[in-house]
Length: 374
Figure 1 (cartoon, one colour):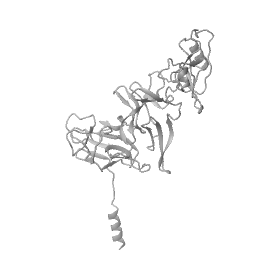
Figure 2 (cartoon, helix red, strand yellow; figure 1 turned 45 degrees about the vertical axis):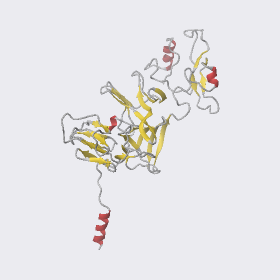
Figure 3 (tube, one colour; figure 1 turned 90 degrees about the vertical axis):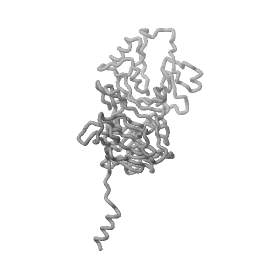
Figure 4 (cartoon, one colour; figure 1 turned 135 degrees about the vertical axis):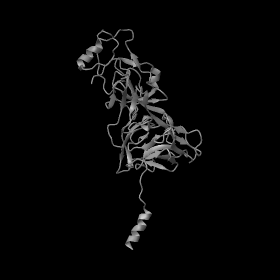
């Protein structure tokens, strides 16, 4: 009797194995899943929040927060499918294709690579890093295509944010349109540098209008071929997300609370927004009940009316307009509570000098109006 009971239990709970790879004769239909080897990430069709549109995406397999998938990549972000007819497959030329309406002739989305001749060995695999890779055979170590080269709004460990000059690739995060629409949003997060100074993160709004910038980045790789930022933490429990509001968040999964905890974010405070107070002024974050912009010593508002209306974007101008300030008894005054200057606009970068030498270098150059030493 005990043997029969054990047999019944084993039939009720069959053994399961995750499938992380599809080949040319296989399909991923709406309702099917690819799950990475260690059950870290899953790929399949999903609908975001209040939307009924269907997308192919990658999300954490076991890190749902309040029944919401933490989606890290979307294939057809600007081309949703309106029903559950979607099919993901690989054609005879090695292209990963997404079809709707029972394999119609024109794909909704596809990879931009093909093999030169028809092949039967191409396959796609979802890795435990969250990377979807396309390759020719099990022996090949070079991917024909990988989702890490085409990020959406999320940076994962192992991904790059920056540019490869040799290949002509720029790795950029682009926000969703909204929480219900993963289409291309209005904000982008880029690593930017003038190639002579330390690179910085920028969040741009509607193209190249600066919305926020970070402090100079200290975790990056730069050589003749590429320059990119990467996450130091190799854990798959951390990610950087660019929200549809323009907010950049660094998140870490807390297993005890079953939720994503914020490590840092920006812009977070009113002085964080790029150019909040314009030239020759600074933003005072502690002035909660008064206007946050303040002219630097020796300067006055460029537009008094704008200043009264609490608009400091036009900045300040010198009170000594008609008097030359160069080699005319000028000096420097220390200004506290300021952010490192925008290195993409810094006129000069000197290395290996002390603060006194930096002072003299700036005094000897009439175009130099301020310096920072670190």
